[in-house]
Amino acid sequence: MELTRSDVRAAFLARQGVRYIPNWQTVHEAITNIAAVQIDTIAVVARSHHLTLRHRVSGYAPEDLWTALRERQLFEGWAHAACLLPMDDYPYYRPFIEDYPLRAHAWYRRRYEKYKDIMTMVYERIRDEGPLGSRDFKDTDPKRVSGWWGWKPAKIALELLWSCGKISVTERVGFQRRYDLTERVIPSQILNQTVAANQVWRFFLQRALDCLIVATRNDIADYLNLGSYMFHLARNLKEQLGEKIQQLIAEDVIVGVDLAGAKKEYYCLTRNLPFIDEHRGREAPPTLARFLTPFDNVVWDRQRVKQNFGFAFGLEAYLPKEKRKFGYYGMPILWRDQLIGRIDPKADRANKTLILRNAEFASPYQKSRNALDAVREEIRRFMAFHNLDKLEIEKASPKALKAQLTE
Image (cartoon, rainbow, N blue to C red; front, side, top):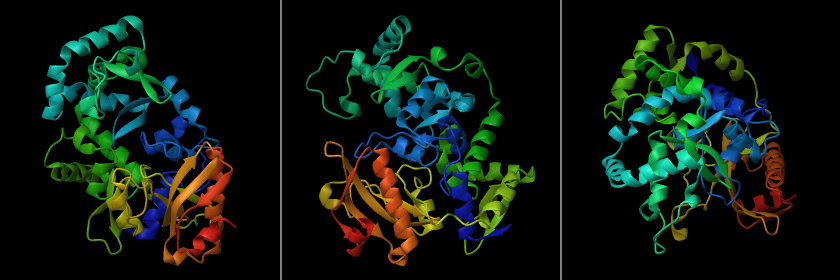
């Protein structure tokens, strides 16, 4: 099959649920379709997981996510990063989780040894008392600093117990995790389900490629951190992944794709060929724009974004202010099948004001009335989601954009 970058963008965005008005009705349905939603703590606007889901779930409200977690439709685990994942996928993640102490970085293994007595104490308290969070354990060192190295021992123990599957996140209260024994969180029919080793790599490879539609080996490896789940952090990941892809090509599960102008090899699932045909000939609505969090599945692989969209950006939140080129929390603007600019938003909740500390349109779209109208409407929706009723724009490029967005 021969495709263009435009074809790839159209099918990928449709598969990710952001090309059209959302048609997924529940959080579980959305996350099942895109495999994972990354959790992040930055709260300058709504946290990333909520911003990712607001584009994909009809009528989404933040409490919907935590309800799905409490109702055991989801579980928390490591995938692309720390993510919320469909509960039905748990049996495929379980081998990695339970083997983690043996395969983790030496730094983690030293912590398992150092904190094993505290882990036992914490585990026994949860076993006897029921769900507990970090704040249920006292800190004995008032001078403790921030970061992993500054966590109180019980918090480190909770993280280690969670990493190896002894406990699981049963709910979040005020974004704080509450843990319970894994056998009291994961439904028994799922917890007791066993998966053959040769099915684990098939699951993750096909799951990632299904979400990406058309992808290179690197793209596939990145989407769900396949180096961990498929090949036990093997150094020759590309070679092993290539071998598995060839095996699935021989079985007619995967086909190679000719991408115009591309030097790398691209692949897609055979069953997705009709999906590609359907969306390559269907225009994206000109009235719909999206502000994508930097942790959205569409843009979390920066190299893929650059290749497919010709758009370069990075998260500058962790850089000193003087080193930031655009802003603290740059969110790309998706319009139709292109990334046309970005904003750096801040929710001033006390004054019910959305502050755009910076806004930028790429030159091809600066005079597009349709693009401007769509972005103004997205600003309105974004403000409503945050319960804000005033807009303030501090900086814009081009300068005329400030007035255009406030018309």
